[in-house]
Image (cartoon, rainbow, N blue to C red; front, side, top):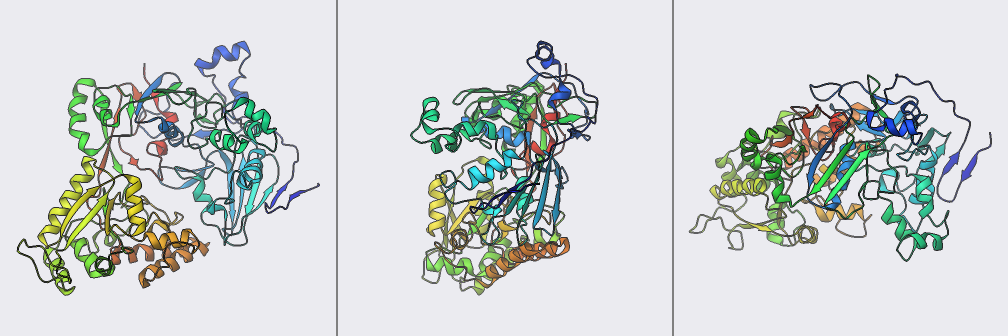
Length: 617
């Protein structure tokens, strides 16, 4: 068979034999709300809409089991950009985490990894986009050749997860359902990037986006339909795979957006071509509609407690729990408390790259960081539910021990105090730390105030300085901030296959080492090279994990990375094991009583397949 080669730096090959359709694996039941369209001939029957071998949901998250199709739920959101939450809640990914954080094929029928450097992805025969058009490897080819490697749409080239030592993969399209990505060396980020809350989408609805692409449609035709000066700008605006804000763009999600932004109420309707079914042959999702009603964020807890939301997984905090519990007695809503997936409710990050030489020297002295860690009762590390967890990660230099903390500070030369009991720096100034943060949420401010009281006992005074997120990031990365407070580690329940990047100085977002992270991200063009032996050790351990194809070797790299972080106290936790409240309406079924609530992995409620939530009569 003749092979097409695309050699202009793209590395894509194509083979196209005919595809035989497999027999359906379950006997399907027609969705009641779609029956009239099927009868009228405007929609194919269900067995023609689903893939030949659909994804069968065999285990349900809640105690209510298999449900009944129909009905709708209303959720409250804080702004129009929250249409992206439906991407999280649908959790339609090539590969997904199950509720035990194990990876499994989802949109894909299967995938195969070889030597950590070659990955073969197999699509489901007969899978269709929400508009009924086939979902095939042409959608992958289009993204790779015409988006990721188009200089107008992607000036920097393919995403970093698709590069190994700066080199892109060889991409082979074997047939309509099979595509292979391969590198000369292992790429540990490839599979993981597909299961993230904000995944690296490897495909696009080619049939739709070709109408907006200058290679396939003359620019003047595109400009006749859409406002803009260039086709590329229009394409980027309409290409809303994650943002989920384009009503014209086909989707693979459980529900499709029907309301053009901006709006105060967004309606999502079931995707009639959705690829998941239950064991009884009922096509998911059960819910016909989901609506997002936009209200002020500070009003959401009150409205949720009063029952104005059928399901509220966002914009609630533990400080709202007492009100929600009391309001629930009248409204009838159920208030759940899930385990919150964060290493700490809020953590303190001494800036090792601070411009102030006095504070930089103190921040870089492990005795100072340990003293502050021991002057409060918690660490900022992974959670016990992670298979990588060891008890010492949570207790190392985090045991509440004021006497030991005072001894460490004395050893540092901070053994003199002013009349107010605050220790004096070597330059005679009081040890006053301005802790900069972005949020004034009650939960976080309460935790920070608790730490302020603890540190006062050992002679360290702190002042909290709230500011905009933009100013916060700017002051941190520039070195103006000497210490910051922000959410704890988000990689709180990792497995050996999860990237340890959050625990090493490789990202600008690392608040304890922003200049070192920027140096890595910019490939040495900005920031500062890491000049700390412990930081260099973390970089080497990260590289060991990246190069390894053996599970045991990756586990050892992770263990050492976590041990170094625990020993060096690069960040200081406050309160962990915090719970996240969710409210559930009286008629909403199959929402788990207990769950794990996190941005990633999980997508908040996405981990528990909201397409299986249903409404009782």
